[in-house]
Length: 188
Figure (cartoon, one colour):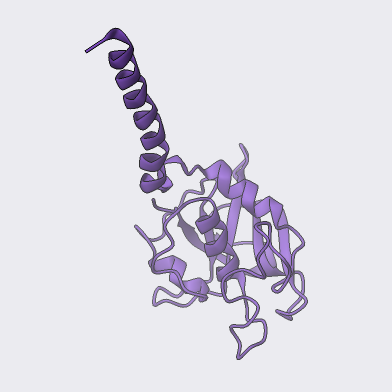
């Protein structure tokens, strides 16, 4: 084999390997997902409504726009699950019900982390009143969050809204006078 043929063979091998690496990384999928990605996606959709064009150019958040017989449904869980999915996390098992977050992954824990879902008034049996995404955990124990289906009581006019800072302690909360039941972390 001549030097030129050997060099060309090596170059072709290097090019094939370089092209294969992105494919392997894409197959791994969520390995590169970070909680910063969650916050970025949530922030990009602030003030959007159930049927607005979201930050990736689609309408709404999962079934937010049509889940109530073709009309907007209460969409806080739709929004939170959509944000996690867009950031590259596994959302298998999550439904349009806020309580599905209480049964997701390892379940609820008491300490908030950026990117977690904060679950309100969870009854332990699959029902919760609300869920939002934790976007900041402050040194004084307060948190900030972004939740879908907020501001008004009408899913058609409610929006994704930033709240806080408010106490991040599990238990009674000034946040809409609901109790924080706990936090759930996204899984890969």
